[in-house]
Amino acid sequence: MIEDSASKSAEIYVIKKGDVANMGLSIVLRETNRYMQQCLPYEHSQEISVDKMWSYGEVVAFDLETTGLDIRTALPVSYAFCTYQNRFLALANEQIVNPGVEIPKEAIAIHGISNEEAVERGEDLAVAIRRMYDNILDLGKRNIPLVGMNLTYDLSIVSLLGKQFLGASLYEVGWKGPAVDILVLDRYFVKERMGRRNLAALCGYYGIGNRQPHKSFSDAQASCEILFKMADQFKIDDYEPAMLHHLQGQWYLDWAQNYFISSTSRHREPLTEEQRHWPIYGYAI
Image (tube, rainbow, N blue to C red; front, side, top):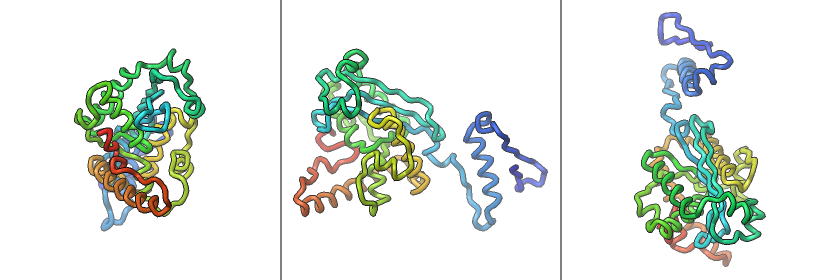
């Protein structure tokens, strides 16, 4: 039972079983927020509302599966856009792509998309690039966050192929984000954590399941659900999406500079100057 003590009338709000489905999550949360507001001491009271939290609005996760790891030569074999509203999956769209080349056995062993499947079910590569461009640009125009894991990989590949098939990179056609990269956020907010920071490691750390790893729709969903955990833990909703996009560029550059120092001292190959750009590498801009 939720009583509105701000009114002197005996107006009573009762949230019953089934109300989440019938009223919608945002309405239920708003009534719950009113109750929480009344429970706070007057001098500490503040509005607690999902209306001001962008992670409860429309958020779209993106992921690619490809022919290989080299960004300059990798081609998509599948892509997915997963749309969330109120932190619930509203739409998942996955598409197989025919890369027009033979998919290496090592890549097939990871994502499971065979050459036969790519030819029979795959979208033409040029068509796929156009559709990815259209989706990414539309999200940017509407200020909808594009969420992913290690977005420099996915977006650099798309941007390079955009140059090849469409004559312009993502930046050249006006895309400016906002993007949200859970790898960048994890490196910034959990600097002290040791070990790997791939998607499987982040799923384990934040308690998120990934039912079909290396399937583009499943990896995209896992990335977005990790973001929601981060949003609560690190108060990421306090940053406006455009500002968060800008800050991630700074955080990524700081990490890249530190990585350069550590890799040099350990005689490992350092990142190039072009690899210090986020969310698209310099050679794909």
